Length: 637
Ligand code: COA
Ligand code: AMP
Image (cartoon, rainbow, N blue to C red; front, side):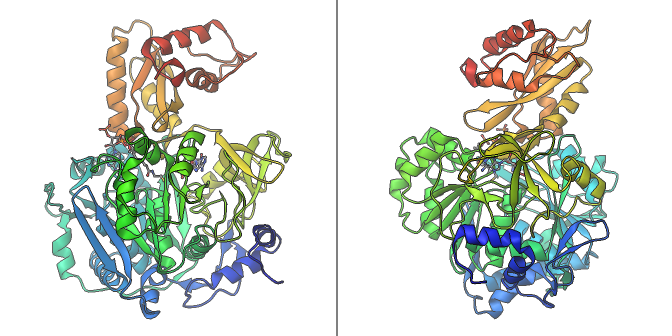
């Protein structure tokens, strides 16, 4: 069948002949043994891609490009306004760094199939570590540096690493955040602490080492010899990345090697419209899926130059940082979360600082991670004379599910839409009973199986939970957890989560987990944690607590204790600032807490009091509490 660059043709083909479509895409990456089949079903009945293919992701991301003559091309640029450093690594440099870190891990007994936890700030060594694991066929699990010890401990216990790699500190807006005390506390809580931790000492803060367990990164590296790439099956795991679910136990999203590499290579060209040799920058964190896919693996697998940015969009040193990085490194395509631009816009409403820089290299801006509010999108359109593309995906998918595929013939933008389903994704909107809804009807956003390459095939050592969380609700479909609709022209509108997951400054968090922590406080009888609208962060969690009878603690004291507790248990990123004492929570007559009603009240969304409410007078009580504390955009926040 002749192929065109037309989105509708490509999309149709990807759904009617997925095996043929993905067999063609497989040739985008180097294989030691090319796969003879695209799609197959494993012993658990789950879809796997390229099952008999043999490859190595680190080879595809580095060594292969050197063999193709890209050795002298910059592969990774570390730009750190946090420390005032800029370092460029060519593909040859990167190979040498990564091979030595792999040698260091090998000396510690790490081999194919072993797991390694990486708890590090945005330093090049964190990317070397990821790629070094891939080189050995080991499985890495990066834990976001903003998480507190209990979050780290829970991940360590689930993944049971042979080694933890960490650093002495991170730097946030000029403040040095020591990591080692957090790691020590996590290991003290952990049931499966590893024999060794390797610590990168940064000059900003010296970590105190525990003799025997903790090892110095620089010393070990100096003794290491380079390690070669170890062939793995396409279906072998590359990494586990934990993401928030509806409870305190995060979900271990598994990424395989082969399908992941193919999907990312496809996305760089067909969605982001970059070419090998060009500069791709995703301003995110290695601790998130965006960081895995588009700071490290995607751009490198596709032969681009990737940027690793250690800084913030504002105050490092000013709201012109992003423009400076784009100009200095001649970035061609840029990707970040809308919250970053809301922060810039707040400090530089006219974006006047951009005039200090030559932004002529940039061709397109992609935003994702949360809904891009129309004022921010409009502002970006106005200040940048390039396509601004909102696109939608999640940790589970690892690459976009809905986008305007710029690498195909682009389609006109519709305000509020993340555009159309990406090739390979049969996106459908279902009602409560699993019936497919028609145009403009809002329901559950689902993907009809099979899921395309790159998508998590299952959860780490927990296929029953994978089925329970995503597949059982609507047989034959993957439940994304988002609500939305598709209009009469096929444009997708994502309206927000239908579960307990919220997005705070692009960080995915669980209000269910927060409720477990708040509810465990001795003074709390019951509680609800609700994600309300936040002008800068998109959403923020607010607690509503009912005190047990006879408590002497004041509401102010309780709030202070709960704020501290959430910070210690989840981390500062939770941005939990309010726990409001209320006499009762609004509930249905069957006892279900009406969280949506509370959120609508705080956000000032029009709503009707649910007919099922047990006591309508509670609504006014909640309104009074919100007004007295000025919590919620409806009450002047
Ligand atoms: N390590 C340690 N602490 C961290 C951290 C990290 N990696 N990331 C954030 N924190 C801390 C912050 O220091 C802050 O602590 P504080 O309460 O003591 O001040 C807290 O967590 C809240 O952080 P945040 O919500 O990020 O607020 P902020 O005021 O520090 O910055 C933005 C606001 C919008 C500038 C920032 O959130 C941002 O750059 N967002 C973009 C997010 C992003 O790229 N997401 C990836 C998805 S694509
Ligand atoms: P994460 O797994 O951290 O990438 O978060 C995924 C969730 O973020 C999705 O399920 C959505 O709820 C939300 N999200 C991501 N991108 C968008 C977008 N472009 N528009 C609306 N919501 C988004």
